[in-house]
Image 1 (cartoon, rainbow, N blue to C red):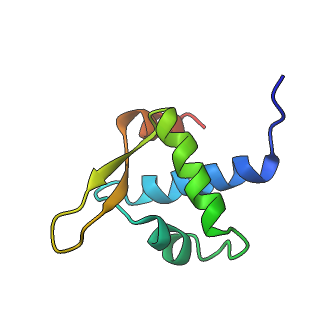
Image 2 (cartoon, one colour):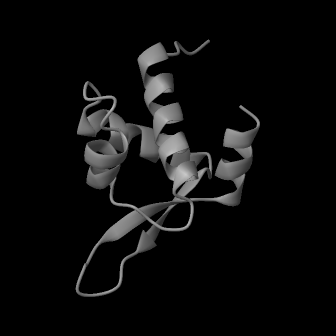
Length: 88
């Protein structure tokens, strides 16, 4: 049986909530941590990135390409992610 890290679960839920509260757009991982999770200054960028990666594999969030000149990608909540948040 896998070991579940309570802090990792807490970070995933906080990131899911941050995206749910702003579900109209896509957001950079750094912005998620510094602006939307500012009430949780102990979360590291690596923890936020890890939470996003795990939620991507569960189809709760997805990467979307950002238009030029802001190259790269941002994170967006999927319908499954919204339902998972509402059911939590």
